[in-house]
Length: 118
Length: 255
Image (cartoon, rainbow over all chains, first blue to last red; front, side, top):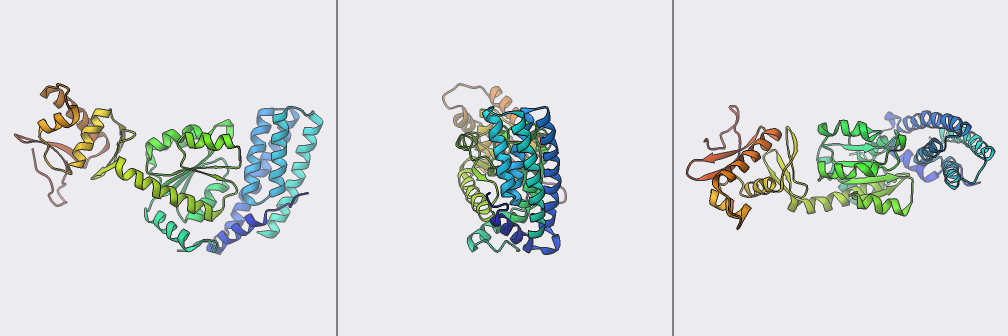
C-alpha cells in the first residue's frame, strides 16, 4: 500500500499554521475536510447502491481533490481508482460496493492519522 | 509580513507587490479548503464561490486582483466555461486554473479558454506565489498597451469594455475608439475635424453623425462614472474632463 499521508502536504500545512499559530489554521482545515469527506462518502455509498454513475464519478472526483489538498494520499488514490473504475464501465455492482466500502475505511484511518499529525 | 518559511526572498517580494494592490482574490471551487489555503498563502482576503451561478450573481460587485478556478465543480459544472467572461470583465486579473486532474487535454482547453496558468492540486505555496506573480507581471506589461485610464475610467481596448466606479459597459468598436483617442489626449481639446479624421478616416460622415456618436459615448460614460464627462467647448471642440465637486479643487472648464 502507498503511504497513507503525503508528508509534503502536512509540512506545508504546518508551515502555514506557523504563520499565525493562534488562528489554528490546521485544525480549521481538518474540520472542513472532516465534514466534507464524511458527506461525500455517505453520498458515494448511496450512489453505489442505486447505482448512479454520474453522481459516483462527480463525488469520487471531489473526494480525490479534497483528500489531496489535506494530504490524505491513499484516500485520494482510492477515490481516483473508483473514478477510473466507473469510466471503464467494466465492473460489477459488487466490485463497486467493495471499493466504496474500503474507501470509507481508509477515510476513517486517514482522519485518525491527520488528527495526530496536524 | 508573515509568510511561510518555505518562501524565498523573490517570492516574498512578489507577494508584497500583490498585496500592495489592496484588493482580494476570488476562488471558484466546491472544496472549501482551497480558498482558505489561498487566503493563508497570499495573506489576502479571498472571496469564495462554489458554483458558476453563485459567482455570476456577484459579478458586478467584484473587482479581484486574481481569480482561481477549479475545473470540475459540483453538479457537473465546468469552471473552464466561465473563464472568457472572467477575462472580459477583469482583464488585469490573472486567471489560474486549479485542478486535481492532470489530463493534458484539460490543460490545453484551460489555456485556449483564456486561463493564464494552471496549477495541479495539492497547492504548493511557493508555486502559487511564483505563478501568480509571473502572470501578473505579464498581464501588466501587456495591458499597458491595451488598458487606458482616465480618472476612475478604465478602457479595455481589446474587449471594448469601459469600467468606472459605477459599473461596466461594453462599447461598440467606434465608441471605444473615440474614447481611447480622448483618453490618450489626456484632457486636451480635440477639434471635430481631427476627430473625424482619426476615427472615420476617408469615410464621409457629417457633423450630425459625429454628434450622434458623441451622444452615445456620453451615455455610456454616464452609466459607468459620475466623475468623467465629455465637454463640448464652443468654437473649439470636445474634451474629456474630470468633474469637479464643490469640496474639491477646480480642474475643468465649463460648457
